[in-house]
Image (cartoon, rainbow, N blue to C red; front, side, top):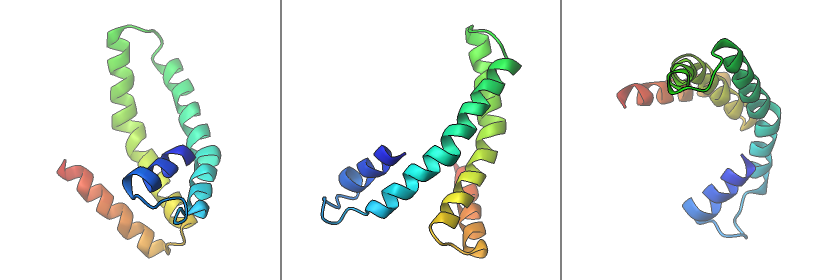
Length: 107
């Protein structure tokens, strides 16, 4: 996640090295190491136990479970943690989660 933040700041936002927000990158590294990595890694282990095998049908079943069940829950938790780490109040955080939820339904 740290590499993704560096790419976002340098290639997308075009901040340059002098304007790079190192603290933001460190926050993303911490979230990746302490939350995203362990949770997603654990989920894939559970998913492999729930739906064993390596056929195309198994892959589709895993994708449906992942995107239909895990992803919405994970996204809400990720946004909540990211907002809290960035200093959002509970109300601001909830509002942001609702905005993302509404935008994802529109797609």
